[in-house]
Image (cartoon, rainbow, N blue to C red; front, top):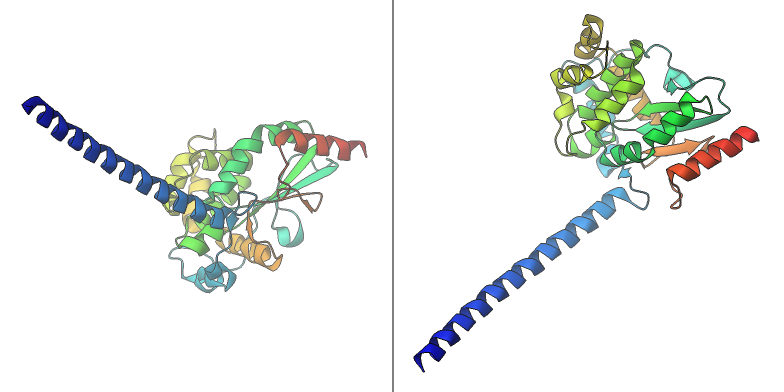
Length: 266
């Protein structure tokens, strides 16, 4: 009888452990579900970082001139070769391309990184072949939503890279080394200069001075103001010849390539 009692106790222990494990599993699933719901609120239908209430009411603009060591309150100095209204677009590709892709992005936005990772090879192929021109607009959405200055600092550094003729390569490096959304690592100019070492010929005295002085800070803020004035609510916002294609749930790199080629024939 004794072994039976021992077995019964052992069985109870196993049941207790199993129940505890099950409770833990249920709790973890609840947490995962809550996290998924939270991300859904943030990213929306098309996997975007959504403009938060703080940004909508202008906290970014109100704090723009308070960023220590920046020139947000000074005149907007556009980077070399910037185009479009108020010179707020950084162009990549040939001017003669028949199709233009307009991209509003924030270097701190994880959805922008997802877009870049997914579409970059196709976009590079289409720009290199002269079929597509991309106009990048830099936004401070995450600075506004979560606080910090990483979006601004990275945007300024990217504009400094444009001055050096290295924007596309540095733009890609920033997304490849993007910190977690809540980690404002890009607010550190030394980190941005360190990453410039990954782009051949970019880490120069002129680039370092441009980054440290915040030469293009006001220009980034002006671009961010244009984003809000345009009624856009999330990043990335991607327009093909003026039409918002990133809202299309069926959009893929292959479909983008097809649309660009069709537009080129038209």
